[in-house]
Amino acid sequence: MSEEKEIEAVEAVAEEAKEDVEEKKVEEVSEMASVIHDPNDPIVTVKQLLEVGAHFGHLKRRWNAAFKPYIYAVRTGIHIINLDKTAEKIASDYAQLRDIVSKGGKVLFVGTKRSASQVIAEEAVRSGSFYVNNRWLGGTLTNFKTISQRLKLLKSLEQLEIDGVYDTMPKKIAIEKKKTQTKLASNLAGIKEMRKLPDALIVVDPKTEHNAVAEAKILNIPVFALLGSNCNPTEVSNPIPCNDDSYRTVKLIVGLLADAIVEGKGGDVAYAYTKQEGEALDFDKAIKTTDRNEEYKLIKLRIREDQYAIRAAKKGKRKHAPVKKFVKKYTKKPEAKKSDTTETKAADTKPATVSEASTEAAKEEK
Image (cartoon, rainbow, N blue to C red; front, side, top):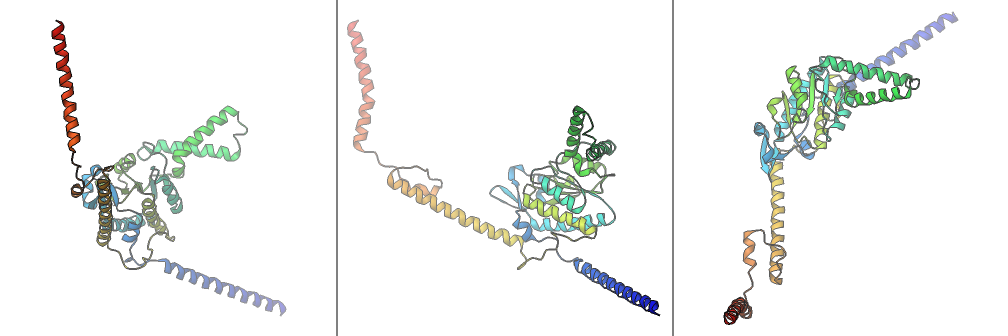
C-alpha cells in the first residue's frame, strides 16, 4: 500500500508540473500576441526622420533630374527632400522585405561608405543577414561560383588557425597563409556563410555601390536603396529618398529595414512602431517654421552688418565694405579739402616744369 501511495504522489506532482508548463506556454503566447502590431500603425514618423536630418539633399548643381518627384523645395542652394514620400516608401518596402524573409529569403546588406560601413555590419549581424562593408568584389553575384571557392579557402584557413596548425608549419609559409586569410576576411567575412544568391539587397548610396546594383539588376534581385538627390531612383526597384551621407539617418532607416527582417523571422523589433509623443507632425508646417527661423536669423545678420557699417563710416575707417545696397546711404565719402587739391595740382605741374627746364638747358649747350 505504501508503494501505491508513493506512485500516486509522484503522479500528482507530475500533473502539477504539466499544468505549470501549460500556464507558462499560455503566458508566452499572450506575450507574443502583445508584440504583434497593428498594421495601421506607422513604421516611422516624419518627426523621427526630421530629427535625424533625413530631409537634407545635395547641392542644387549636383542633383539628378530623375530625383525631381522627391524634392520638396530648395533652401540656400540645397535640395530639401519630401519626408512624407520617404515615410511612405519605408512603409511599403518594410512590408515587402518582411514578406520576402517570412518565405525563407536571405538578405545581403551593402554599404562601403564611412558613414554606413559600421551600421551595415551591426544591423546585418542583429538581423542574421549577410553584409559587405569594406569593398565590393566584382562578380560577387554574377560570378558566385568563383567567389564560393574563395569562401571555402577562407574557411579552411580559419580552421587551420583554430586547430593550431600554423604553429607546426614553417614560419614563412605560416606568414603567407595568414596574409591571405586577413585579405580574404576583410572583403568576404560578411558573406562567409552565404551558400546561394540572396533574395534581396539593402544598399546605401547606389551611386557608390553601382557595381552591386548592376549585378543585382542582371539577376533580377530587388534592391532596397537609400539614395540622395544626386542619385537616379529609376535604377533601383525600391528607392528610399533620404540623406544618405548622414550617420544618424543611415542608422535609423537601415535599422528599420533590419527590423523588417527580424519581424519576418518572428523576432522583436527595435526601431519600428515606436510611439510618437505629442501631436503628429506635418512636414509642410515643419518646413515653414524652419524657414521663418532662418528668415529671422538673416534679418539679425543684416542689422548687425548695417550697424558695423554705420560705425565704420562715423570713424572714417571702412574696415568692412557694406554688403547690401541699402547700407550705401550711410557711407558717404569725405569731401576733399582745398589744400589737398592745390597740393595735387602743384605735384602735377612739377614734373612738366622740370622736363621743360632740362630741354632748354640742352639746347643752350648745343
